[in-house]
Image 1: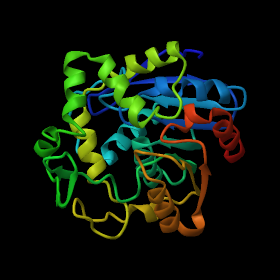
Image 2 (image 1 turned 180 degrees about the vertical axis):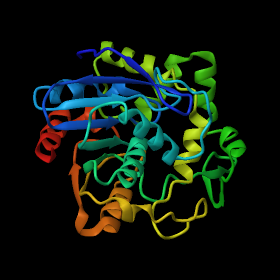
Image 3 (image 1 turned 60 degrees about the vertical axis):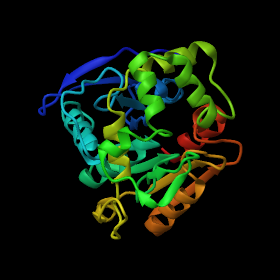
Length: 296
C-alpha cells in the first residue's frame, strides 16, 4: 500500500484537521472515513484514483492525527469541520465518498454545500435514520423496548462500547484486531503490513462515545425516531446519491441501504456486492474500484 504524507490545517473552531491528498486531475473526490478508522484506510483507494482524480481525504475530529479539542453531539458538526477545512483549499466542485459513519457526514456536507457536491457515494453507510442503540439483557442481547438515550448510557454499554473503550485505554491492539476480524474483516483481512497501519490509525481514536451518540441521533428524514426528531435535511441533498453496499454486511444491514435508496427515490441508485461485508474495500477491492471509477 502506498503511503501518503499527513498535512495539518487549523480551522476556526480551534480544531486542527489532518488530511492526505494526491493526484492533479481536474476531477476532484473527497473521501470521508468511518468510525474506528482514519484517512489511512483510504490509501489504497487514493492510489487507485490518483491517475484520474485529485483526491482529498481528511481525518475527522478525534480520529487519526486530527485534534479533539471540543466534544460533539452530531455528524453535522463533523461535516461543518470538513466544510471549514475545504474552505482553505481550492476545491470548487467534487464527488463525496463516505464510508459507514462517513456516509452520514457526507450527506450532511452535501446538504450544506449543494452547489459544490456533484454526487454522493455512500459505502456501507449508516442509514438516514441513524444507528439505533438499545440496553442489553443478562445475555447481552438488545432489549428492543428500551432504547439507549444518553452518552452516559452509551459509555456503560457492556457489549458494543465498553470493550472498545477498554482497548483504547490499555492500548490492546489484539482485542481491537479481534473485534474487526469478527464483524468488519470477517470475510477477508488486509495484508499484514497494511493491517498494522490500520490498527495504528484505529488506536488513535479518542471520541467513541461522541460518535456513537452522533450516529444514534442522526436523522435526516422527516419522521422522528426514538432517538431524534427528523431534520428533513435529506431534501437539501441536491445531487445524485449512489449507494455501494456489501450484501453480507454485519454492521449495517443491506436493508438499511435499501431504505435509504427508497427514501431518495429517483435521485438514488443502489449497487450491491454479493461477496462483501462491511469492508467492501478489502472484500472485493477490484469490483469496488471499478464501480467507483464508473460513478465518477
